[in-house]
Image (cartoon, rainbow, N blue to C red; front, side):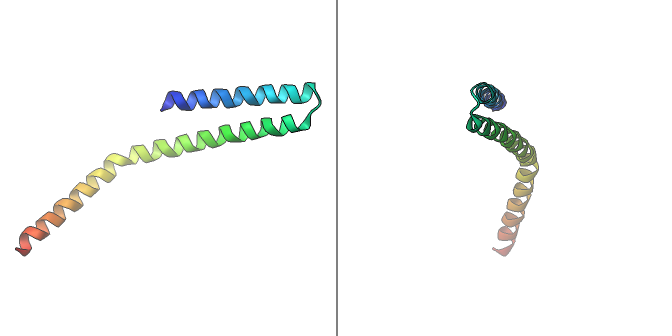
Length: 81
């Protein structure tokens, strides 16, 4: 997943660079707008990647908590019989 994120960032920033260069060279402001959109998309990719990593880091703790809760429910059901 890390390689996919790096490739995505590279392509978005490469496209932004080319669009900005073409926008300045050909005096087309819409190319500069598209370059800005590519830069904004690359920022969103970084934010999403950081959020994903945080969620994945929390999974083992959440899994252990769920396991304790299941064991507690099983014990409760055994005591009720």
